[in-house]
Length: 481
Ligand code: HEC
Ligand code: HEC
Ligand code: HEC
Ligand code: HEC
Ligand code: HEC
Image 1 (cartoon, rainbow, N blue to C red):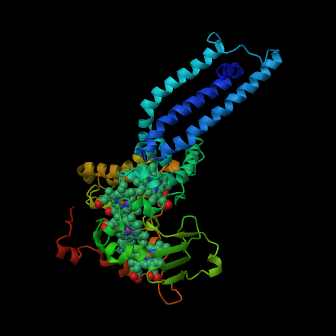
Image 2 (cartoon, helix red, strand yellow; image 1 turned 135 degrees about the horizontal axis):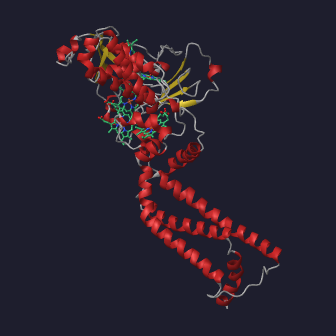
């Protein structure tokens, strides 16, 4: 009996759903089901650790599926109303039979969409996910929005690390948190309502230790590292000086130094920040579960009442390395580096000062800057000494090109990103950095967050033309003019 009754029961459904709204719902439901079935095995086998697959599998496809499920009865209700209005039957229908055009239409619909989905699903989806995972997608799809970060990234030590490795990472739990906000970001981009500049710090970044320690595990740290910084003075002769720092990186097995002090097993450092950018830090608490010591440091101008309700955070890699890959430069440091590398010839009189001045000017657009900076350089040297200009023309043009490149990898007027927009928390020269906490503030027990110049690095030489330590080590670079 059931085999007879089933078609009878189904027949009103088939007839009534033979309208465009319900059919759209049918397409949505079948599409979502077929594509979902394609995704499932990839997920179960753990082949794709890709957060975008996650969005699709757990957010988009189910959304389409249930949306479709709602459309089908909606269409039926409308169809019933329409039939009532026209006086057509709404209950009694001929039994299902191949000769009914409605049934044929419905089955053809399901058949064609399923076939199309099978083809699309098998050909496209896997590649699409790989694409969405790629740096190209992150950096270029939202071209204008991400241009500052993408540009800085390309010149960084992480230029081969995919955006998702830091921003989302593998695993299902973080995808939900960071990607739910990611969905919002996609809409903000489409609707052109995203903030400019993109605010930092990033609220939904994965915990740094989980992310960074995939590649930089703490046991690897330890040794001191020699840093040689080259600078050029502002005068006509661009005098070169060198600063030599021995960075006490520490950590790992060494239980000392910068990493050791903040990251050793048992150490937890919490802080309260008075601004969203975490630049103003009036309260710090150090606790060590191995030694059992807890020390609270209050800034000189803060009171316990004033800091009680401020947002708090546990310190991790990102509080120092907040620009591991989107490292924007300062005009001075960028020109110094380009001159040290010989990209801008130090033989051009006063080029350091002039270059920095040209970089700091405001230009209406990046294109305008790329034209105006070399132009201004040419005019300057031609006016100063036409013979010199004629002899050094190629060098001057090259310097102009390099300066324009520096400008355009740091300044993005359409995103309101310019010099100093994004603070770099490592160091203490251009931004407060380490000195946000290390300002010699004293705890009740007399301990200090030290500002001793030799606590974090030994200053082996500071702004010297030819530091003895470097000539002793045979490391003094040639003063190549
Ligand atoms: C090595 C890890 C790493 C990689 C790789 C990486 N980022 Fe970031 N990104 C960060 C960190 C750390 C921040 C700053 C977080 C903070 O301060 O809270 C950040 C911040 C951002 C911001 C917010 C604005 C800003 O500059 O603070 C954007 C946008 C961004 N990244 C986009 C990208 C894009 C696009 C890529 C790939 C081209 C990428 N990121 C690759 C670690 C990374
Ligand atoms: C997928 C692997 C990977 C991840 C994840 C990663 N890094 Fe790196 N990191 C690298 C590689 C590769 C280098 C380059 C090593 C070199 O130059 O010797 C590097 C270099 C660095 C350097 C040294 C830069 C220099 O000037 O020498 C720092 C600092 C750093 N990473 C911090 C971080 C931080 C902080 C995070 C987390 C936000 C992170 N990295 C995440 C792979 C990674
Ligand atoms: C208190 C601030 C601070 C914290 C927290 C911190 N670092 Fe560092 N890290 C530094 C400084 C400073 C340097 C040296 C930079 C230099 O040489 O100029 C450094 C150097 C490094 C280097 C380069 C090491 C080398 O030998 O060249 C890597 C990689 C690195 N950090 C990764 C990490 C990771 C991963 C974390 C989190 C587990 C972390 N750091 C936490 C301040 C910090
Ligand atoms: C959020 C606050 C905070 C920031 C920012 C911070 N530190 Fe610290 N630092 C601390 C605390 C807390 C201690 C441990 C003090 C204690 O032992 O009671 C510490 C200790 C140290 C020590 C050991 C000092 C000693 O006397 O032995 C070094 C070295 C150090 N920090 C380097 C750095 C460097 C380099 C930076 C910047 C890259 C930095 N810190 C940024 C909070 C901070
Ligand atoms: C809390 C740790 C800490 C203390 C204290 C500290 N520094 Fe530094 N210093 C750093 C770090 C980190 C850098 C950045 C190295 C880099 O560029 O990666 C730095 C960089 C420098 C530089 C080179 C920066 C540049 O661009 O020219 C000089 C010079 C310097 N420090 C001098 C000093 C002097 C002088 C003192 C004492 C008043 C001092 N530092 C105290 C952590 C510290």
